[in-house]
Length: 160
Image (cartoon, rainbow, N blue to C red; front, side):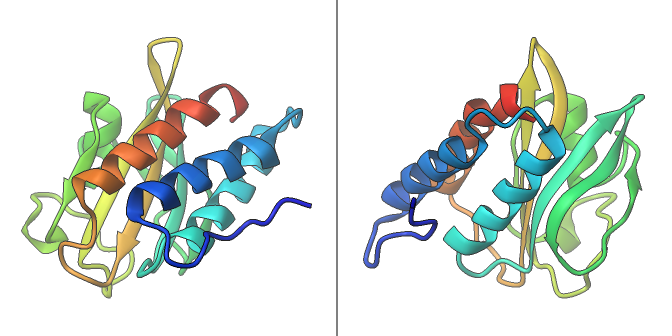
């Protein structure tokens, strides 16, 4: 059985590497993308401290639609011209926001969220989803976190 938890005392880089390995292991040979997103959302919540929301928005007919997540109920549909998730999907680039209240057009699904990291999942040159992480702590996400979640997105792109 694979241990789906980070090793005690692991560095941020090690935690992200272990998270990626766990996601690859748990999605191996499973063709259902929704099931894979659900398990990866659970892994994100297990591996990364200080989150109040972790999950996916899927690209459906030109807008983002809520996918599997861990956290409080969330906005179901996000147009690409709104919010941090919309910006990530529209531009195909990672959005790391230290203070969501200062982000123009921020969508406040959970008033407790203070910082956000959104990474596009790209397959065949197109954004198919975004991984969305929210934290009640301002400035929670580092460049190292962004790089780790980008590597995760690349590793699971063919599995969701």
